Length: 99
Image (cartoon, rainbow, N blue to C red; front, side, top):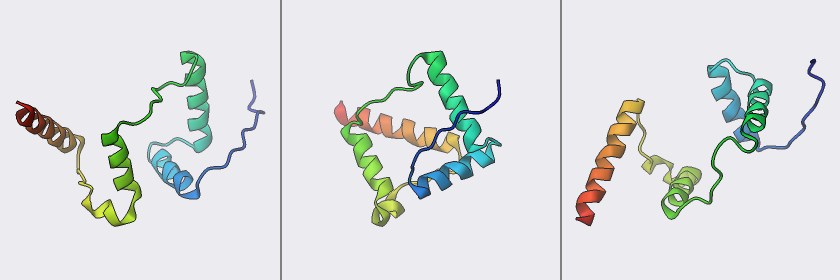
């Protein structure tokens, strides 16, 4: 079947550009990514990921990321291994505090 359907939507220019950069790094066009998303909706018979109201910790993290003055305080990780090691260390610290 040929591609003849159109979807027109408005998104924030910064979001579109950021997503485009990520998609180009993995070799996928925005159109292909949207098609993949729609196929997943059909396969899952719904949104293919959980949609929830963020908890207080997640809201705080989002605020930090979206606030230009606070961006410098957000810790950056060079690798996934570094990120996970940091996350595991934080969990252990929290567990000790509770004990």
